[in-house]
Length: 105
Image (cartoon, rainbow, N blue to C red; front, side, top):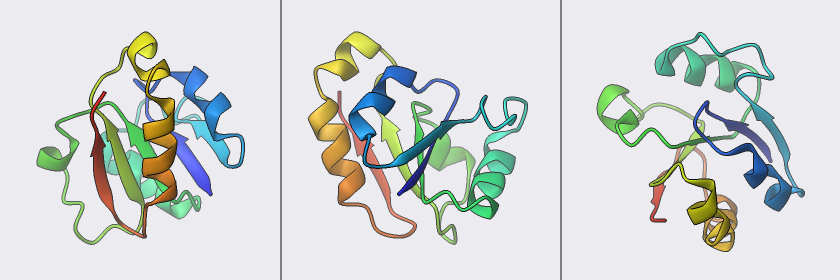
């Protein structure tokens, strides 16, 4: 699966997703894009999952017609996320096209 990390997503999480192709918005040169532009660019580039810590995303963007699945981590703290990596990995594995899920941390 091709996964894109948003700016606030802790990069060490990628080590737990080694079965997937993971890139960050910064690595893609998309640091300056707004959320709507970023989701559009990610979809066009073939990303299937967008992982973010932006808890307001669903209120700011119309996610209904998107094909990219969105995972919202309810914390940006790597020490907290590091203790819950199995939950994040399981959530990503369970995603379908265009799904939206929030992972409590």
